[in-house]
Image 1 (cartoon, one colour):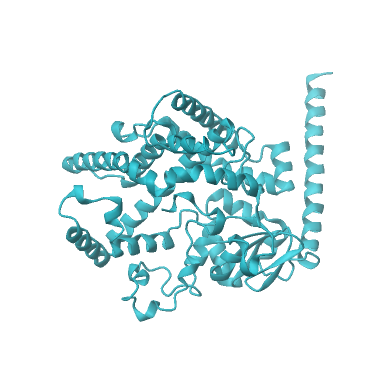
Image 2 (cartoon, rainbow, N blue to C red):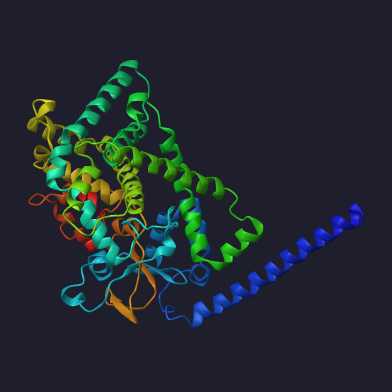
Length: 462
């Protein structure tokens, strides 16, 4: 075969394959449009026609990082419940949707069955074992029972000096930066602090980001690997995207991100091994977990320990830094709130040594400022997808068929005028009992659940 014949043969084959794929895509989209518009059991739930038929807008917004704002716009247009994909519903009626979807199966929910995690939303676990974030109900209960000891009041008291040592180091480093008169990217410094703290608690050793005034390579790998999650979720959910990606490399940037996930996980396993080899009673997560596992026959396996230490690092570091960055920004943009908080702090504490976990519990405006920050900038601005059990259930008074993926969209709910007056304004006073302005008296404060709700809410809420 000549070079020309060889080229013609392969080019023709490729063009034919693309033609077949385009034909398949066309028929798939037409069929999906007709079914989802006219025959789907969710056809009466409003939403934009392309989204309810194909999920393409959802996928594009997930990839671009604009999903939270897009869902908010949909709720402003369509109301309390919106169909964002062919099989996925978003709610902002949080005062009823939170308990209906995520709440304990007691009272009126006693016989409704649990809404299981929608695992298509999650990237597959690196070692094949699901962490507490996405494990099934039975394993979740066992895992939570083991991990909860590391977040008890007793544990927090023993961890206090360790945490304060990092706060002191942060203040020292920021003081040096201020003395130099240079602009400071405060979010980097908050990330340095939270990653050092959580790594120390999870693996027995910090990442030394604060000491070195730069990100450890681990953190850079985490930031890279997280970018793979939207794409992996899209591939899990949609045959069309999965087919195009497999045949044509639709998501060419994802493999490097996936590789970073596995490299990071392998490094985390090594750190867990090193920590387990130490004979120590330091008040980190594993000390409390193992101290109580000895009293139980529900111990975690080594694979479960690995995957959950990684989950705790991811859940407790960047999210905390984001919230602290948010409250810093909002206070500096709202000087009345800033001055009131400064006055509360200066009045309560004469010396930095007086600042303790117990003492900060008696600072109402500080708590209000943080609550309002979590409303405006929820760490998870989208939802926690769950699957409707059985033949279907009522959510916010509306019957939803079984198997539908449902959630409360936090950013959309927190910024909706149906739930909060002046939803885009920073008003800590709306959270202060006894001095709440009349304008905010009817705010639906139960809608705001930044740590989720029910038996699977965040362990680190305290």
